[in-house]
Image (tube, rainbow, N blue to C red; front, side):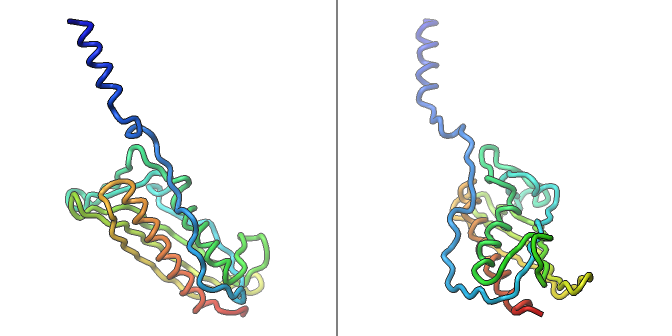
Length: 198
């Protein structure tokens, strides 16, 4: 009888999907194909984004707005390939590079400085089966003249993207789409406020 019980336990273990316990790592995937490439706009120095301590890691985060909207929770077996702010900065650098030179601070002379603050990057559940990706980003543009720096423009970008599924893959897809939309908005905003060399 004991042998039968051990055999049954072994068989039940073999039928358990192994993929459920595997860590999955995501990035934003291939960058969208640019619609136009002018390369004629003024260069900008892109600073490393600032984030709150909750967004410093690689966790894919969610909130249960219907239960406790103040609590951020991580998916146990899902991670970003790098902190979200870095993924956004990398994608923004690619997008802006189609229109203008993008340099690191101190790398080369650029008339404009762009600083970003990522304030929110999570999947928000309005109900157990209904959620959306929420991105909140603040951008500050300043102009460098000689040794001084003057604030030119400040804008907040808030993007909500419905999630196709109420799980970690749904969060990744929604937050990637929200990031691409926010980057398009930042790029268009910069084209207006920093179109040419001062």
